[in-house]
Length: 175
Image 1 (cartoon, one colour):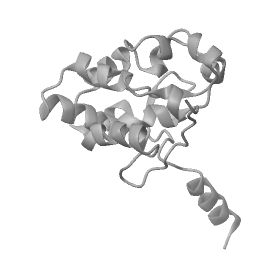
Image 2 (tube, rainbow, N blue to C red):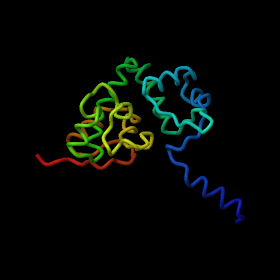
Image 3 (cartoon, rainbow, N blue to C red):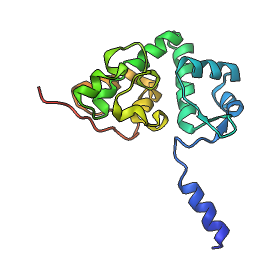
């Protein structure tokens, strides 16, 4: 095997579902929508594309799944953008990520349900510098086939049922 082959193999090994691979035009083609619609989803906080150093938006496989899910909610389930955003804001990030009561009280995601946690302006110390694109909380709505089952799983068993995606660990306080 040549050095070039080894370099190529190692590059492929680092690609995962959150690696930015697609331009906004390709993302639009893959999801059956338009570039301007994807920009509007970004403006509304439904998707967070990666920004290349040039400023161009780049989308991962996970983003493509998310965009298709948004389209499914709009086209087949009768939701509008506000309804989808509300669904996303109901994900209890404080259950999925460890944070103290003090951190919860200083975080708008805990104190308000108007915005998904990745959109709030005031975040707890745990999330202030975190990349929301790679957070397990951000990726839960990607599995739009049955969000109710996801929420029930969180509440009832402490596990997220579904499609084999990694299950975030839950940190609950004993009452």
